[in-house]
Length: 227
Image 1 (cartoon, one colour):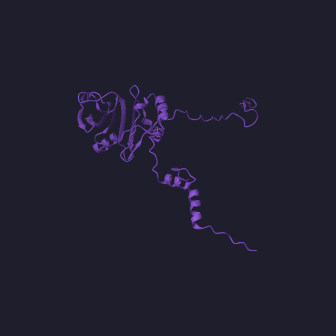
Image 2 (cartoon, helix red, strand yellow; image 1 turned 120 degrees about the vertical axis):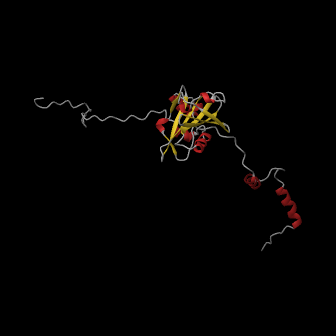
Image 3 (cartoon, one colour; image 1 turned 30 degrees about the vertical axis):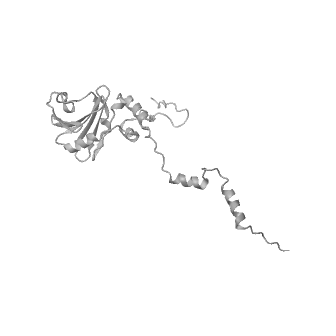
């Protein structure tokens, strides 16, 4: 005997469907709704990450005898850091030089403790050239200084002064100004390129020519006949 499936009337199906859909708590969207909301919601604004080079910067600077807060780096088109120039300035200041690959012009960055004001600016020589007359001109938040054939931009920071100097005839003023304004504390990658590592280079084994390639490696003290 063939049984016929019973078809429930629409009026009976409607309450069943409403009951199934209403089984979820009010205000609690289903999985599909949650996924849709997550996709459309803006990402939360995270705070600025800590400088990853801070610890490395401190250890490398202190190994050189430089105060970490006095380490700066700059950027000037065409100029490359002269690694051998990186070193200590004064007690715990910092100094480094960049070289123009085409003209061999030098751009020196120097950071040391102290201040510079309208009263003290003429008394401070340009590029450590003592005994020379110095002229000072205010240029925005910096001082443009000339003397002894050199010119310099000096910027006062908290407790220290950042100076970028060069020979007047070798580096134009606009290039010097841009390099001074570009001076900043180095990040992790810049620290790695700027400061030498505190880890000593691995020692290269010394090969001795009098050691035989066999036995216990004792020196060959053999004496020839009549020797």
